[in-house]
Image (cartoon, rainbow, N blue to C red; front, side, top):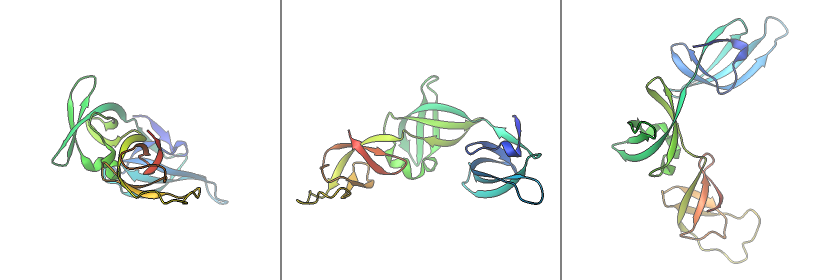
Length: 187
């Protein structure tokens, strides 16, 4: 693994630090009036989600880790485990449903997800940013409610509650942004 200087750390870098794998979330370079410059780095543990603030001077060396990304197809869920299949080797992998967090309801059968591996260990699962869902429940449109920012609550076929524009009705397919949990457009 390559070692980099403390002032070369960028947001998104994955580092091996204090015996764990950490992702750099925020990096700010500080040049105090007295003493040497340093990088103030906010780190997030990739295994348990803990956060840590650390200072790295330019002469400090840290291990930068390269994670392998594989696109795998979601097959099914059983007992809190998600089963994915590698589309090249057809090998099946079981992962904890907790890796997806809040975005779990948007995972659909046959969907391709990107899984990041460190050796044989899966660290994260990311699904497409936009997913098509069906509106299963919503309120009827109120006549005269044509203000630019008027939205109404809706429940999607996967049980997620979001706000949608008044012109979208029950049974319609819509595109939802899975990062912001927001209506994006009609499908």
